[in-house]
Image (tube, rainbow, N blue to C red):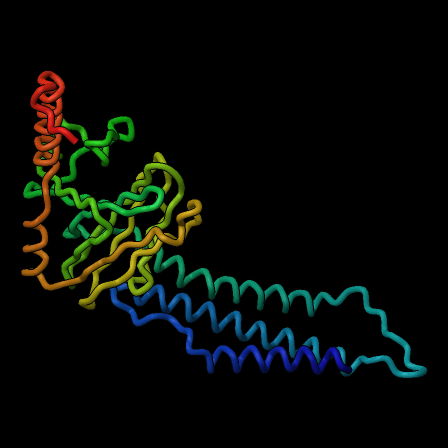
Length: 285
């Protein structure tokens, strides 16, 4: 009897905690309302199953509790009950899978007019690359990564010379324009996640992954790493600033291209070489 009361109290407490809790999904700031719909449908199906099964157990424990002189009824099989349970379970699973599969199909089907942004993850920071005026990202390979070439771009690829390199954790995006996020990792598994966008995807070393979204609300949103990636995992954060087109264009104009960065790196190496060749001109420290 006590067990039945505890189970019923657990169900009631769980429902109250859920409905009265201040912790809920953050306001949606992208086009992915279908992901919210899939989550809500899954929640309702699981909630109905949780309440029904636990109340059934509580009722069974109370109704068939031990009584002096009572005898248990043994029924090894009940094909009718098994068929009903199989049918209801199948319907519940299908109800949870279908919305998610529909949302996933949209999630990986990138619109033809989507802009491209590459996010690069490493322990424990984010950096970004955007195409230049040609609208095409240059080719990149892990073997080409150096201190001067953090993205591993091919210096001989003409499409990469005008790529914009954002070597900070702050990314700007235009509002109401679709964006394809191309994801790369330099070292271990990471996960690009912006809660308000409902958008997340793993970064896998050696593999290029992607998803797309359309930011619909202006503002600043946190970029989180949602995959345990080492001791600094909790500090691997960034910011997405969603703004109007004019502000976005101004931000783009402030970024340095890959060609400019390589030219600066070359000038720096030349100056160091000259300093090494002329020790008398070195600045005393």
